[in-house]
Image (cartoon, rainbow, N blue to C red; front, side):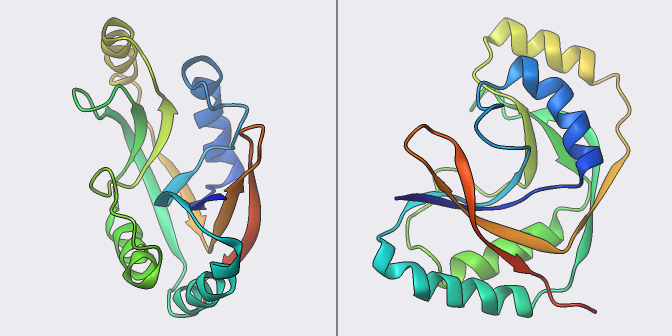
Length: 170
């Protein structure tokens, strides 16, 4: 089965992201807006207890933090994806490192860049147009991060939460 590990931002951030995702993200109906901590990976069900135990340890050793979204960016020319960029990437990078340290051994396709996708699979012209328009918009969004989720993909492509992991309280 296909799994991933994500953070879902606050409902306010999700509202803003979805206002763009409805139009620019074909995965809009498959998963709420998210920040991916670990790329999708195949995992045998027999390996789930070990993964869950590891993720519980990661969560208990991580303090909650605040995510600050401040602008729109893109991965062009590598990928025609536009996203809300994070001003403070460090807490996400640390959490990512803890997760992948003993997690799934799959090599990641891309370097880890924490972000919230608002558009994907755009043509080059559409990407230029949308990023040009959105580069003039001032984003000042925050979201408290006090949990992350192990999610899995159903046969119809929809992602569902398998388990939620609460970050330890300060």
